[in-house]
Image (cartoon, rainbow, N blue to C red; front, side, top):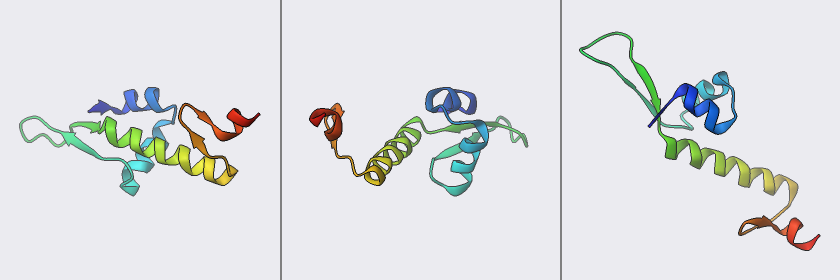
Length: 79
């Protein structure tokens, strides 16, 4: 689990984009609170964030009609 500022650094997305993904339920998170306090620390599932980024990357390749092949794209392999 990582904090919001770590998610921003890892993903390259801005804070508002991270919060939008959380609001839409595309990335898992929870608020860790101590002793029934109203305010806690929002933690994001690192695995969930990476899965979202991977799906977004693959979707961008489909829009460009480029096939992913191992560590390179088909376009890079051919050209």
